[in-house]
Length: 423
Image (cartoon, rainbow, N blue to C red):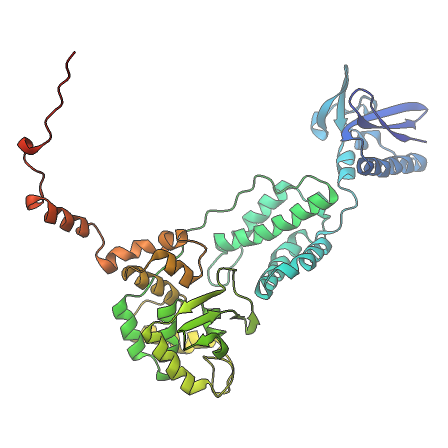
């Protein structure tokens, strides 16, 4: 009967058993813990079962052991020296034992989703479920979560770069990173729970190109609002001059419109036809109404307030279907005016650039947009400001011209005399 024992020299565990009348010891670098003992006990039971059946192959369990008669170093991993003249190795079987009894990826992924759903918005729950079902389960589903190797993950990421996307020929780097983030979350939790080394180490996200921001000029906004269908003019007026996201304006209810204080309270969104929480904590905000927005909402109130709770709705009082509106109203409008096709989300970018052009306080703009700080504001939008405000160095030229004669430096004689030094 074999046993799991501890080395006196370093406290590491080793397997002690008998085979063909000889005492065999195989050393590991596993610490003496209850969990590691349990892993090696399972391995030992497999060894003794194979010995009893006459199926035990020493080399397959311990390929670099002297007792196996195999000298191929590549079949095992050298770990340390157990004794002065003994090279300790751990075989593939021992490494498998270290990851034994982990659940299948598909089962653990479902458990991970159930445990974390409480902290996710419903729309993000659907996103995670879609990624797991479409991308992760087909690749890793029937594999034990503890046996997934790093090279598999890299190969999987490479395959994602060739997978077809919804709007493009292949998945974008941003979408690939989103898929990989879900995989990383699952594997990190599994490795922490089942005590194995997470294979998702030193795998960095792909570089994502800068956002394609294409705001409209004020002249283009005017043309759009003049040409758009009358029943959607107020809708796009509010979008262009508040910077609301699509889900925020489509999910806006009359109870969140305060005409007395001229505020719009962003408290809910509408995603895939379902009411949901705001995108982030910062998205939960109060947006000020300009006079143009105030008047547009008053006209809309007269038109739809009696139909139901939604500010912008169809004739039955139901919230707008943004995909339908985009296809039937937005894109035909751009084509009619000869403007490049742009997503309706560009109305939000337009609001930001117009506020910057008007020299509003950047911190106020960030709050109106629902940003955490002004960093994103300047990173994304500031490059458009010179074209709108002529803030391209000409103001500095005017400053010099107003304070220096002819815009040039004073003559040399008027300069500060050079200091002389005496010993």
